[in-house]
Length: 308
Image 1 (cartoon, rainbow, N blue to C red):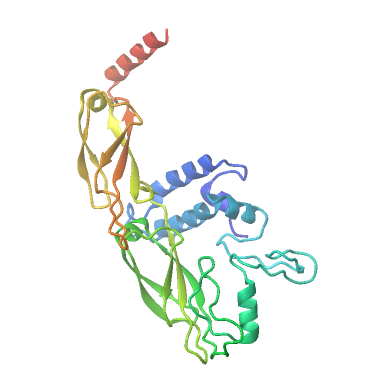
Image 2: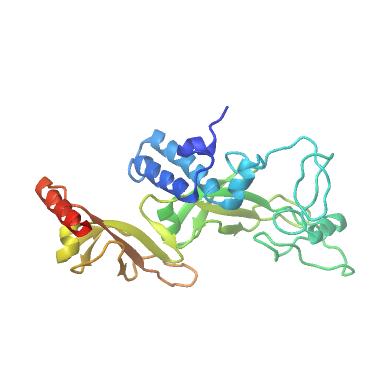
């Protein structure tokens, strides 16, 4: 029996969103490929916890997983039985399936288009859209079907841009360009890489899943980093080394900086390849207590005096 997603993250089924995120960050620091280059076991573990986090951090996906509608990989589970129901989706129990009109299922245009053999054109509804063309204008040769595949890329590749080799349903492999600034859930269209048909091949629609990073978090085009800062530096001011997408840089911490303060590194965020816009990096100061016993004792006496 495969381990549940909760087992992968080491959390109970009633864990809160914060507990799930905290568990993932803790585990990611122990097995992230960037921290363990060449370690296949760590890479596999990171893939498993990333897949678990991707589902459990999404309220809708988590609910569907808890109900047994999707498996540990996010794939639809096959139910015995089922019924037709207007409004969309699969309903177990009842002898069949129901259709979804819109969303990820078949919409009315798709059903009618399949019945009347209309050519598939640029799509317009949802991430994969609908069909173009109308009735009474004559029928065109039906193009091949689009195929849908998903690929996972690491956080840095999605932020900086790169390539990813993707295996299509027919077994062929193609190198896909990942534009800089690609966000999780982006769908890339590969023209003519779908199933063949009388009117030409369909397209391949590649959904990009971005793996979380143990240090960087994305907020739009900005990057958020929690940065430990020694108490002495926070009080007197100074410099600390901070990781960025392009390597470490020196960050100036002003005197008397409180924990939780956000310091900005201009232009150190994500660049959107389509618009050319560049985000910033936001560094959240996390003050560290001194490790020296005498200094720590002094801080404790001060804290006790303030509390009393």
